[in-house]
Length: 439
Ligand code: SAM
Image (cartoon, rainbow, N blue to C red):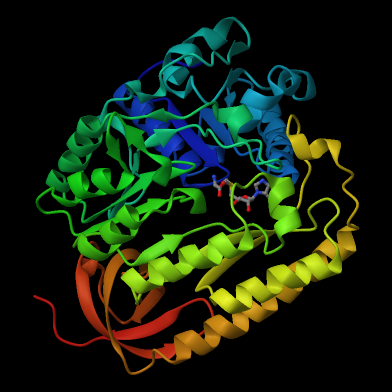
């Protein structure tokens, strides 16, 4: 039976930083109501699965997770199970039909009602998929940030783009820009609580516009918060990279030299079909502008392989774009048809084996490049913000968002920015040692 007090909850999150941040809000609200976090699902009285619908595989994870939870609930009938986020918004009550042991279903806009709705589940399943609810009503101080070092801060909810492959506008709705004063207040509060770094979040965060204040202006407002050490943001869209934005990356002290700028494809035909709003030339010119302003900028990207009708020549154009840019990191996905998207009308005609081959070609190229780049850093100095305590040491991120492991360093460094020398490198991480004792 769910009641306040000793009730323990566990949240399982799938998806991007925005989903993680949503879970942090739900966790904070539950804690504020007297619930306690459980160490794992087996120890919880309420299990909440926060979902991602971007690829079919992501949605499948929900059902795998729910079938495991069914066994848990058979042993403990008092257990409550909730599903929230993008798949819940997309599939709605279909989830209750497929998984009768689910007690609570909330969409992307009603996550803040979880504690209140949970109380109602004693009378049977509760569903709230109201799209008009204001998700920003979670008080800043209530959010239970998962990391003690890097705090996610919402800048924009939703997305106004119409990418043919993407389900996000359907699950999260149109863009809602959060007022800059509210963002700055939240960052001030985080800095007061000791956070050295914040990451501003939005599906297309650099599309931010509040009255006459654009994203570069917002960065300047946040950069001015006293005590903030590092400022990051994700995800950016090439269409919204302006000179003003590039200048902000160069000029603002706390803004890290790192940008995730999904390109999706190097073929103009595919980009047009994807409705990305730019072509190959424009993307490359954008990279040139950014590198001109910020020579040490680290760039990562997303690519979709096997988009409907993608020929081998078109894939080669994507590979050649990746080679021309030389990304510092790449996330490659096999195209996955999603409900309600315009690409669904196109035949998903690239065989899965061929999608896998293209994915592998890109990943192998990228791994070789990253290894060579990282090895070239050996012997160089860098600065690492320690964010994780690990067995036998700690790890953290350089300003360029490279992972650096510091074997032998102590947990007291958590949250500190430390000078290091790079001693070894692999494709996905650096190994480093402290260059001076930290007091
Ligand atoms: N809003 C960002 C943008 O438009 O660039 C990122 C959104 S999404 C959460 C992250 C990545 O998933 C996308 O950049 C894209 O590469 C990939 N993705 C989105 N829809 C997909 C689909 N239907 N199939 C395969 N990959 C997909």
